[in-house]
Length: 74
Image (cartoon, rainbow, N blue to C red; front, top):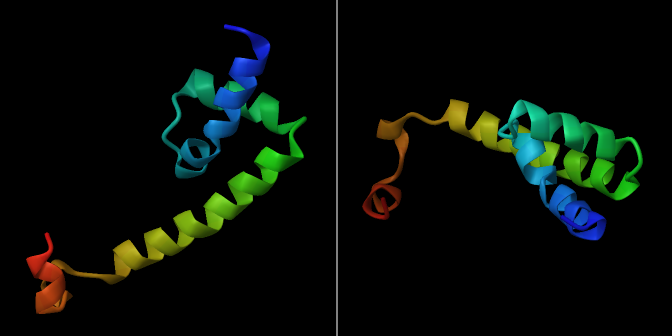
Protein backbone atom coordinates (compact mmCIF):
# COMPACT_ATOMS: atom_id res chain seq x y z
CA UNK A 1 0.00 0.00 0.00
CA UNK A 2 1.42 3.41 -0.91
CA UNK A 3 2.53 5.50 2.05
CA UNK A 4 0.09 8.35 1.37
CA UNK A 5 -2.84 5.90 1.32
CA UNK A 6 -1.71 4.44 4.65
CA UNK A 7 -1.56 7.96 6.13
CA UNK A 8 -5.16 8.59 5.07
CA UNK A 9 -6.15 5.27 6.62
CA UNK A 10 -4.38 6.20 9.85
CA UNK A 11 -6.21 9.54 9.99
CA UNK A 12 -9.48 7.64 9.67
CA UNK A 13 -8.53 5.45 12.64
CA UNK A 14 -8.77 8.33 15.14
CA UNK A 15 -12.39 7.61 16.04
CA UNK A 16 -11.86 3.88 16.35
CA UNK A 17 -8.79 4.49 18.50
CA UNK A 18 -10.73 6.83 20.80
CA UNK A 19 -13.47 4.21 21.14
CA UNK A 20 -10.89 1.52 21.91
CA UNK A 21 -12.00 -0.75 19.09
CA UNK A 22 -8.75 -1.03 17.11
CA UNK A 23 -6.93 -4.32 17.31
CA UNK A 24 -3.60 -4.39 19.13
CA UNK A 25 -1.43 -4.10 16.00
CA UNK A 26 -3.52 -1.27 14.52
CA UNK A 27 -3.59 0.57 17.85
CA UNK A 28 0.20 0.31 18.07
CA UNK A 29 0.60 1.67 14.52
CA UNK A 30 -1.81 4.48 15.29
CA UNK A 31 0.05 5.39 18.50
CA UNK A 32 3.27 5.62 16.48
CA UNK A 33 1.44 7.88 14.03
CA UNK A 34 0.20 10.08 16.92
CA UNK A 35 3.80 10.88 17.84
CA UNK A 36 4.13 12.85 14.57
CA UNK A 37 0.59 14.02 13.78
CA UNK A 38 -0.82 16.94 15.76
CA UNK A 39 -4.06 16.77 13.73
CA UNK A 40 -4.74 13.22 14.89
CA UNK A 41 -3.86 14.09 18.49
CA UNK A 42 -6.52 16.80 18.31
CA UNK A 43 -9.04 14.45 16.69
CA UNK A 44 -8.49 11.80 19.36
CA UNK A 45 -9.01 14.43 22.08
CA UNK A 46 -12.21 15.61 20.39
CA UNK A 47 -13.48 12.05 19.98
CA UNK A 48 -12.52 11.40 23.60
CA UNK A 49 -14.93 14.08 24.77
CA UNK A 50 -17.71 12.50 22.71
CA UNK A 51 -16.85 9.01 24.00
CA UNK A 52 -16.96 10.33 27.58
CA UNK A 53 -20.40 11.87 27.06
CA UNK A 54 -21.75 8.75 25.35
CA UNK A 55 -20.52 6.57 28.21
CA UNK A 56 -22.08 8.86 30.82
CA UNK A 57 -25.33 8.91 28.86
CA UNK A 58 -25.38 5.12 28.45
CA UNK A 59 -24.75 4.51 32.15
CA UNK A 60 -27.37 7.04 33.20
CA UNK A 61 -30.30 5.54 31.29
CA UNK A 62 -32.34 2.48 32.03
CA UNK A 63 -34.53 1.01 29.26
CA UNK A 64 -37.75 1.59 31.23
CA UNK A 65 -36.90 5.28 31.68
CA UNK A 66 -37.17 6.22 28.02
CA UNK A 67 -40.16 8.38 27.12
CA UNK A 68 -42.79 6.50 25.07
CA UNK A 69 -41.94 8.35 21.85
CA UNK A 70 -38.28 7.23 22.12
CA UNK A 71 -39.37 3.62 22.62
CA UNK A 72 -41.46 3.76 19.43
CA UNK A 73 -38.43 4.63 17.31
CA UNK A 74 -36.51 1.49 18.24
